[in-house]
Image 1 (cartoon, rainbow, N blue to C red):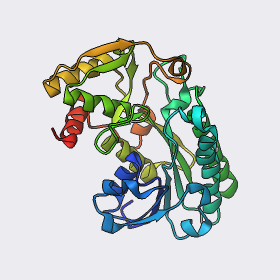
Image 2: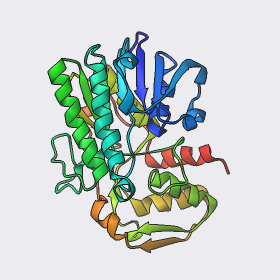
Image 3: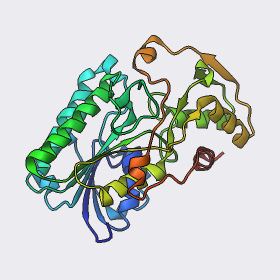
Image 4: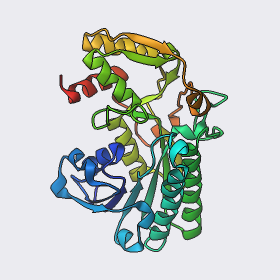
Amino acid sequence: MSNSMNVLITGGLGFIGSALTNRLCREHQVTVLTRSVKGRARLRFPERVRVREGTVEDVTAADCAGMDLVVHCASTVDNYNILTDPYLDVRTNCAGTIALLEACKEHKPKFLFVSTFFVYGNAPKLPVDEQSPCEPLGLYPATKLCAEQFCKIYGRLHSFPVNICRLTNVYGPGEAFDNTKKGAFNYLIRKAQLGEPINVYRGGDFFRDYVYIDDAVEALVTVAERAPAGELYLAGSGEPVMFKDLMECLHRLTGRKSPIGSIDPPQFHQVVGIRNFSANISKIKTLGWTPKVGYEEGIRRTLASYGS
């Protein structure tokens, strides 16, 4: 994306969306569509970003007119809505995605959908790749998988370039650290920094793939720049890490010994939660992207962003 472009980022004040906005607004004309402007403080160059407050469900063709690239980050972010407002996932992830695709079908910008590793569920074979079967365990990933299919269908039917990038667990500066339902790893980083007790499911005896926010953003930029139309990519660190090893790293970097307790997951989490996950990122590496920040350095940077 060497030439200046007009870019629309839905959810552009969220954790991932704002980091992408900060990355692109230095070279491109970026418009953010956001449900709430509460995340405006995440913008490093607010004077370079046009912010439009509104829901993705209400987006129109006029919002997408003249856009060269649309990045769809707007989404619900956890599985718990099924207990309180299950239709929120459907409205945002399904109806919202269709509304955005409808708004794009005339002008045909390049379209990048930001998806999640949660669509895989508890995969029978690890590591997973883009061809692995998907068996989402909750309503959130089920609606994200539906949205992926909508993107593919609209891209084929209306002949505009669509790509999908599934991200693994993203962490780092800019994510909330006060909510275990989203940004759980950031939450634990902050508790360790404060020396507070930490309760971990199964004593941390499980592994995940954690990708630092800057690497996740560069993955999205790489797909937007270089991916052939219609292709799906999985982006993560490619190096699974045991959660208990992350806790040991936190102790070492903070110099504090937060008491770590082992608890059993609640029944809801046992049904919808993924236990172990690792990603094969060979395909996205063919585009020239590779993660640069290991988990220890990523934790160090995240701790520094929180101050003392």
